Length: 98
Figure 1 (tube, rainbow, N blue to C red):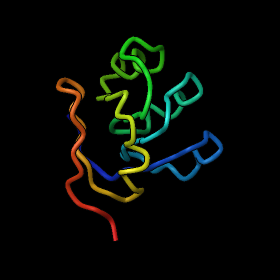
Figure 2: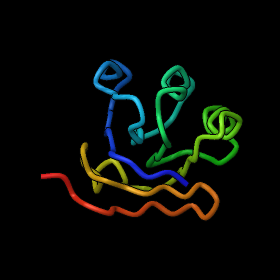
Figure 3: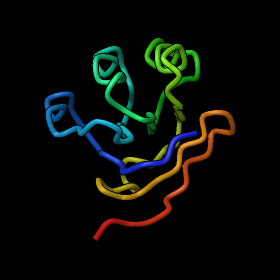
Figure 4: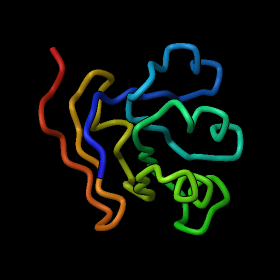
């Protein structure tokens, strides 16, 4: 599992706002997001499949990933402290940002 601050991104064009160790929260993790994976603590997506290329890469890198959360990018805000458990598929908001 990983615990840290969320960074909600809707476009790869926002990638420069991602800080090292943040948890990447995106609508879908397509192949374009992979270049950011070495920088993140975990990945959370609204849609996607456990066997998608991006999620397989995350697992290979040892990065917890939870896919198909349906509304994660709407419920989680940048700066929220969250916990991501890739084994159980659970994402918990520990503290909302101000």
